[in-house]
Length: 423
Image (cartoon, rainbow, N blue to C red; front, top):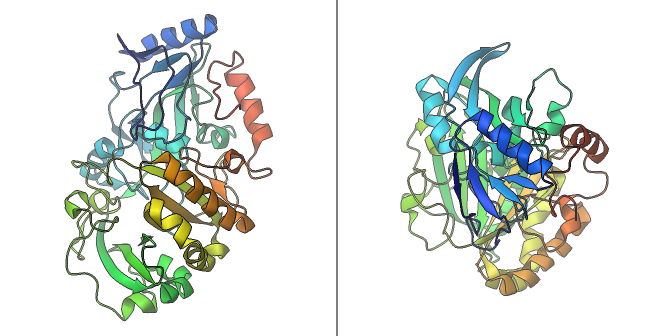
């Protein structure tokens, strides 16, 4: 087991963690001992993953623990509905996906960044895109975690608690392994359309989002009459019809970055060249710095019926938002039934914002966005910034009663509580 000074900041540098130390147990049994001892001393505990959350969801004033050194492999085993992946919680998607692909298996979706940890992404309901694709968490068929009593608990597919344990925000224990539903491996081609009329894209937005298995619409609002780019990722085994505004135009003949003017070296291959699912579904290559590095992010989730209103709404407030904005992205996600998932009970359109790393500049712009989208009852991403904390947990959106009952059973000591979920 290794003990070190805590990781002081998150990936973006906007959160300074308050943990007293960072411990990386060398085995699951060591992790059990560490967690039980800390809880017995009245110390709060949080698992620290890839540190990609922009909120304080991973923060604690007690002990940070890392599951990176537990020595657990990525495996594929038979399940009742076909092969499942058994994944170490701290592994990143960049580490897991090639192993699955080599075994002839694949996941149903990927996030924009393959650099994030599997457990952290699932716990915060992080997602990719696609009308028919649930979040990354919807692939989970079972998980294993260490509770505050030091017990190793497995919650399986036939356990009704699984729907509360997957998107847990780290509040139930330290996850050690997850079992993920897989499917046969597949190839994807990615094409990008650049500089499109915003009014045309807005009018056809439901059809645009249905044009591929994963679709992203990007704009920096510098010219509210134009959409910067539309990225369409299409499985070769399930071709789809393009929206008219795309079908009537040729895709770009050069590689592009989602943020206008940034070198596309870090982006996944485009121009229709087929490749393995895990090399096309993310926007960025695993071997390169993702996005633009220094940035802030926020994201609001709306009912999918709001999709045609997104671009006109952003156009109306562009003078307030554009100076703070690097890029605005629109995606779609399928509904699920996970208790703390922002996609619970409704098919979703996501309004994502990558901001300049200047909190004073971003704050009024973010407030303007949240106010403008308020009529559609937005839900904020648990792992990103918001000017309105209540949007992370809007009344009636989640099964908080069920989750609190589960938390009372698994963490009666309150060791995994933190200020974001318990303000």
